[in-house]
Every structure is written in C-alpha cells, then in structure tokens.
Length: 193
Image 1: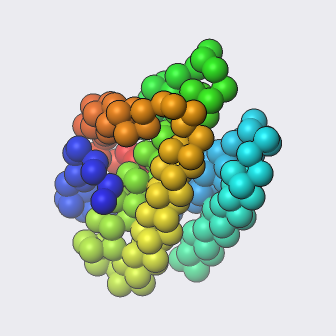
Image 2 (image 1 turned 90 degrees about the horizontal axis):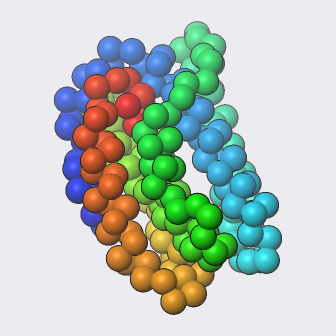
Image 3 (image 1 turned 180 degrees about the vertical axis):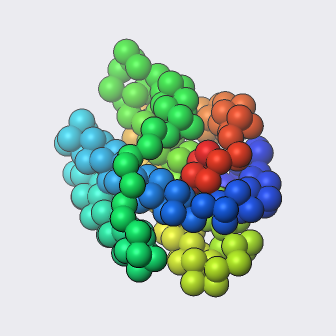
C-alpha cells in the first residue's frame, strides 16, 4: 500500500530499545510538527473548505497523539525532553517545489505530508511487530493505522486539487527521492532517524 522503495531494517528497533526515552520524546515532537503542518495548510489554502475541515480535525488528532505520547513518558517517570531537529523531514521539505503557482505548491505540500505519514506508518509497523515491550507494541500498532489513514487522506486531496497535474508521476518522484534520503537514516532512536 505505501510503496516505499526502501523498507526499514527491523534491527532499527534494537537501537530504539536502547533508549526508549529518546524515541518517545522525538515521537511527541513529530506529532506536534504534524499538527503544525496541518494548521499551516489550512491557513495557506483557506479557499478549500473541505481541506480546511480535514486539516482542523487532523491538527486536533495530532495534538491528541502528542498528549498520548507525553502520557507514556510521564508513566515511565520521565519528562518530555527538548525538541529535536528532524533532518529527514527537512531533507524531504527541500524537495517541495517553491515559487510555482499555488496549485503546484499545494500538491507538493500534500505529497510531502503524505510521504512523512507513509514513513511514520511503516516505522510504527516495524516497532509494533518487533519491540519487546508489549504495551508499546500495541500503542504503535494503533498509531500505525492512524498514520495510514492520514497518508491516504493527503494523497486523495493531492489528486482532488491537482488541476491537471500528474499526481501519480510526482508521487513516484517523491518515492524515489525519499529512498535516497531514508538511506542515510535508521541508525538513531528517533522516528525517522
């Protein structure tokens, strides 16, 4: 379904398990950034009422996920750490076309968002299937389903607002580009790292 070109090596979970606190903090901030991204889309494209409605709901859901991850951190007797830079997301964002017509930029922003959701979904699947902590396995399985829904929603909106653009072609370009980006990661206890 996701069609990612480079799957995550399940051994990445060994790195994650060496520092659960780190991945939980990183994950919490990924959820916060996803909410911010949704808000940015509705602010920049207010003329698309259905997109505004969907992004409003998505921002709420992402903040709920932030709250859920923060609760997991507190249950472990820890506190939320400082925000980390997400180099993976920054590299993906560099692929978004800028300085083009609004419709072109919108499609790229939606595909950029879909790509992050797709990779997060894939990483959460790997976690849910391989992490020893059964509670976290169930938690990540639940979030995997949510990320898959977000991924398909962003693709659907990209196709709806394509205005003649070949979204499938551009999505394949994103998939190829993302494979070159993710190849550098998978060595740290972060969601995309």
